[in-house]
Image 1 (spheres, rainbow, N blue to C red):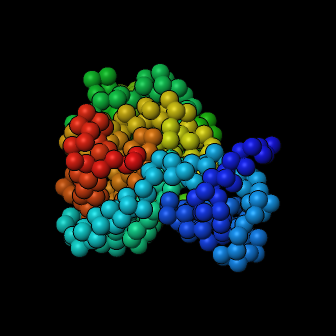
Image 2: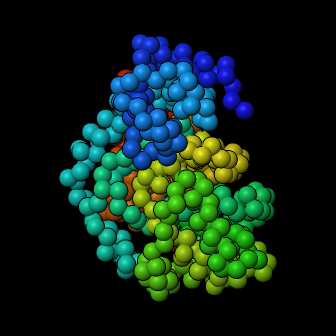
Length: 410
Ligand code: GLN
């Protein structure tokens, strides 16, 4: 049901903004300024409606045409846009800062690509891209936007799926929530004989054992891809079969972890270990790019609501639990230092991707496959350090307001 009062108010708002001369080019200009440029799906229906008018770019849009364009749109969202009240109001300035960080780091070649999964060493070593998506759907992307496998970055999603299906209590009968203090694939369990947390290999294998355990392997894999599609509003999520086979053929450590957990009776009753491991390897070989990953991170930032489609993909409670563990355990053996100096939930993968979540504000994804000694993307970490140095986004920065850092919300 269209609210004519709201439409009228929006019309007045746009009129005021454009000095009583609303035009197609004017609307497109403010869309671009606020992060709704080419390819942004959030505003695609509005852009179509604008083009369907067949008006000259600078011809005035009257009230009747205005209603035609906006009638089916989310008026509250466009009112925020018009008033400059989106979650990152000075989006252009923010993305210029990200652009500067990108250029500063572009020539850095420190670190080495992962090679323990043989296929991973065939990537373009110096690929580099950054993408941002806010909880209002404002987006920005810079770099080559190459595709890469999710690897460990799938772990929060596996945990979220297990939580939604089985509930917190059941899930944590099988996996802990303490940082392990060891590498991501260390052959170790906690004092109860369970994986330390869902963000390391053993814990993610455990999450897999709880995802649609009674269904076919195909249905279980599809359930993971579906979740990613709903979190990202993308239909461009693919699967890298070469990486999958390469990992499966060389996965002695993950097999060892699986058998070690089975020996300790850590799995839910009836778990098929081989199928569980296959699902884990498949999930790690799902491929996307930073743009898609930033959308996923933005859905996490929005408490499980996809900013583009407005659908609630995961419960806010699930996301809260996920973010808590990403905060304390998301960056392998660097997690403590990360929580201290960056202060944001994040997850990295050995393919060289990282995504970070600024709750209530935005998600950011970086891809740069050269890794540091702990297995995190070297430039990925540098991007985050630069971000936190400039902007007041560390979890506890609120305590030092006005200490010379920029505020994303003004
Ligand atoms: N598939 C990888 C493995 O199990 C994931 C590890 C990672 O990204 N840290 O070893």
